[in-house]
Amino acid sequence: MDTPLWTEEHAPEIDDLPQSGVRESLWRAVDEPLNLVVHGPRGSGKTAAVRALARETHADPDNDFVEINVDDFFGMTKKELSEDPRFSSFITSERRRESSKADLINHVLKESASYSPVSGEYKTILLDNAESIREDFQQALRRVMEKYYETTQFVIATRQPSALIPPIRSRCFPVPVRAPTHDETVDVLRSVVEDEGVEHDEDGLEYVAGYADGDLRTALLSAQTTAETEGEITMETAYEALGEVGTDDRVEEMLDDAEAGEFTDARTTLDDLLVDEGYSGEEVMKDLLRVARSRYEADRLARLHQLAGEIDMDLKEGTNERLHVSHLLSKLAE
Image 1 (cartoon, rainbow, N blue to C red):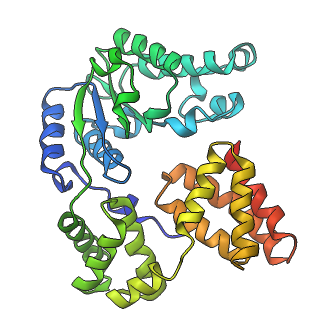
Image 2 (image 1 turned 90 degrees about the vertical axis):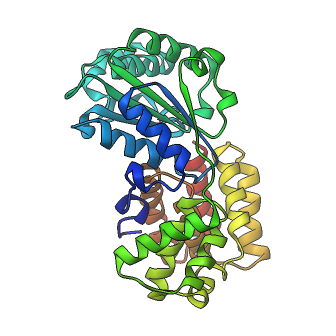
């Protein structure tokens, strides 16, 4: 998508968060900085809540708030880590050459925590999607948390707090983030579409909220999709934009398999879509990108769009559809 995502354009402040319990916990953390474990289901607003906290507590959040998406971070190569602008200042070419990837990751965690805040008394490091951190890295993280507790606040966002080792959980205040209710989702949608000046009616907002089923990110991006493709949000236009595609579950399955390295299974699903169900390569790519919008954070989504743009040129030339979409899936597997 070329236009800014509504999830980014309408990032909430603490008082805008729909869950009252989350608002109370975060205001407490503003007054008394604590390490936090923010946990809840996908799309409940965990990352948005932490970003709101960072904007409230830091005079210079661009420098004193470090956001690390664990899924992307641990999937980076040594070269990508050393070239990332967040970390490049403390990764020398010699260290990159002589360190294993595990050592380099530990070095990044330690150095990110050790530098002094630009403004105020502390900085914040968010580790997002933390359920996928290996136990040995969790042990390293524990030691970093113990050493730099005076100048660094750690916030760990996860769908599975039980995946964290007890020494980390014991050092963090838990902030449960439940999925927003249907009415809360409708209220958020109404506020955003009114700010955007999009024509809408209550039935349309109700339909989008029901379609999202408690996933606030999906709700906002689905409303944006409807507004951009249909020009307004009514029940009819939302159904037309969101209800006509029957491939979402298959595409989700295909992405799950690709990310897990199960490339053969991902390609089998792709074959089903292209051959058995008769979708074109361009249609599969369109659905894949639409599903990815409610699945990935902005940085990862941007990289996926870059890959898709390269493949789209080949698809338009009418060459082997299976080959080119399979290439994108293999990149996800990497």
